[in-house]
Image (cartoon, rainbow, N blue to C red):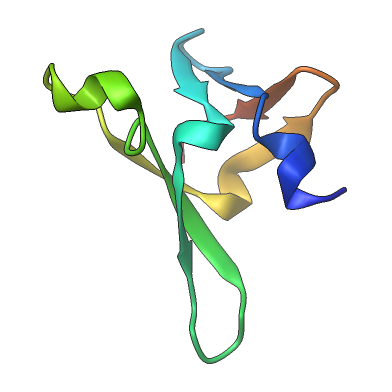
Length: 77
């Protein structure tokens, strides 16, 4: 799967049912030495986050349980 294919997917926490936003609004945290994706930060690039307090959450890449056709399912550690 290409990174661009993830952009429109919603991020859902399976433990709480909370919608954490769209993956395209996230920042990736990448290990510069290995190139490995460590985590992503939800709600960090949204246009509307400039006007209101953002609910930013860092989600570890290993907490992704399933990437479906229209959403990414994560669980808390």
